[in-house]
Length: 285
Image (cartoon, rainbow, N blue to C red; front, side, top):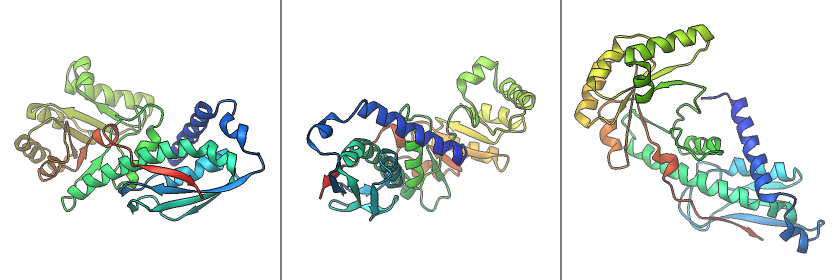
């Protein structure tokens, strides 16, 4: 994953772009009927059940919109919540609260949904030693938020983007002329460019597993779209040579069985691309 400084920059860019998109040259609904001297207080009301995520992000949004606003946190990120819970209170300029409202709600509802789904997978994997990973199957422009939510839900982040890890998938392998050529070319590229990036290689069958194992320097093998029996065979073949990861349509019904095959990680795009927003509201008090 990227450094904390890089991650913080991503969050700053998301906030700035979202406010630009939503506010434009002004929140004219508020400007039209609320004096700029008016102050108020609002609560973040939970109207659903799940894992809360995005409280810390909301604080950053409020600070960006108006540093004078004050946030009183009642429930922290990663906590289980139920209908009627109040996550926080925010007080300050009424216009500022309304300007930040939609970004806070949109982000928190999606982040909480992702954290809740991730936590379901974490619970299903309990006791196996296998960790759940996210993917790059994220909403364009808000990847940092979605990967942050996965962490809040108890999952682990895969690579952040194309630049922080090498991942040789089927198309890379085919375009490069085969697994061995792809790995050797990659190792030379890393040497020539003086880059220190981990290498993950995807395998489509057991023969490809065997070929990968003939070459050193692979950090993790992606065991893609294997059935349970072949996954167990792959794990046995790989042993302690490198880490293992299963992927390919794995869901809540199958994740435990794949974990019991002995893989170190399971990656699931569904953590970020197939969720239903947690119902939250920001209400004046």
